[in-house]
Structure formats: C-alpha cells, structure tokens
Image (tube, rainbow, N blue to C red; front, side, top):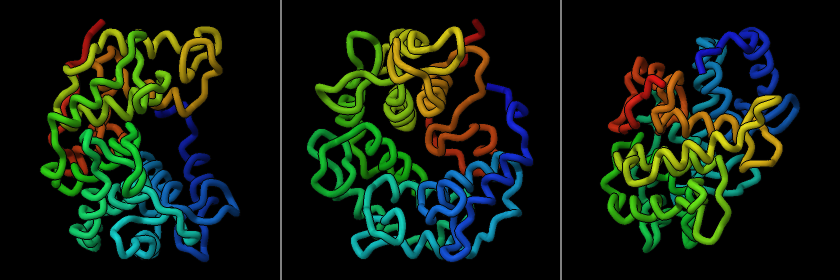
Length: 279
C-alpha cells in the first residue's frame, strides 16, 4: 500500500530477533515460543523486506529447515512432527529466499506434492486429503518456485479454482463452504500463477472484498459485517493487488511479497496479474 514507513523499522526488526530460538536455530511466533517453520519463513520475509537479512544466522536456519523433511518428502512444522503441505511450501519458499534451494532434495519434495494431487486437479494438506484452496496455493507456488508446474493439470485446476466464486462475488476454499476474503489470496494467486485470472469475475471479487471493509476504523473482515483483522486485511489487499486495483504495489503471488523485491532478487516466475487500473 506504499506505507512501509507506518511501522518503525527498528522495532519490527528487534521484535523478529526476539523470537529467535537459540536451541533450534530458527524462529518462534513469539519470544520464548518453540521454533516453527511457519514463523521462521515469516521472520525471513520480514527481514528481507526490512533489508536486515544480515541479522540472520543463515546456516543454522537452513539446517533447521532441512531437518524437518520426512522420508516421504513432506515437511513437519517443528520437532513435534505434524506434517502438512503448507509446511512444505514454507520450506521451499524460505530456502529459495535464502539462495539455498540447491540443498533441497527437489525430486523427493515434488514427489510428495504429486501424491497429494486429487482427481479434481487440486491438492490437499496431505496424501488423501480433499482439495482446499489454501493447499492448492501452497502446492502450486512451491511447484512454481521449483520450476515444476508441469506437475499440474492446468485446465482442470483452473476450472476448480474458478468454481470457487459464489454469487456474492466472494470466493470459498472448497465446495459448499461460505465465501471468505482470505481466499482472495489463495484462489487468485493460484490463478495468477497459472495465468488464468480472467477465468473469474474480477469486478465481483473486488466488490466483495471492498464490502468487507470497516469504513470507520479501517481493516477488512472475512465477510461483510464481521470484525476486521490483520489476516484478512493482508489477504484482501493481496487479492485487490492481483486484480489491478488502483494505487497498490504489485504483489508476487508465488511468494506473497512485493513483486519488485522478488524481481530484484532474480526469483520472479511466469505469473500474470490483471493490468493496474488508474481509477
């Protein structure tokens, strides 16, 4: 939104570093919390966006990430062993941002994603799990980073994603569920990576996201009338950016980070957003 200065840079960096788990060599979600791959990726993304990656002990973080890969190819989130394709994406994303993808067993990783692919073209949280828009995005984005989008049935998955749009204009995560602003990111980013954003009604999605705003206090909720929060505000703005909404910076749908930053790092993939409107 072109307001990076709204957050004090040093305070942000200090908080991120206060979440470092010295025993694990990675980051927890809060000071004194156990390290987790999700919060570790978030820390890496924030430090990169704040131009403070020199604060990171890269070798230890890489060791932590690689230690979480299971024999099947999937990753656990932490030392307690829960597995999920979301954790696999966190690992691939983080290693890519750190320039350490060469240390990943790519074939084993892609092999697990392949086993999570369903008849409808989508992906689940683990082998045998139903397709879900969030897991579709993490698997699609991970395959994009690894240059293995050939593993996806583009037409079938594009159809499944387009079917997530409801009469309200909003998007849901799977059949028979309510629309929710956060799927503006999961669904639209996946369609953007597949170069199929024109398969949904962009004006209706835009109107739904905007209708979920709190016009008095700011922020975006999951749907109109509910309490706004940072989570849905982030993913609502992300969706609006991909839809070409005026005044926003371009979002890279693979990394969910500023597109200009990812391009400068030489990591941009072949995604396509809608043209930025001027009004």
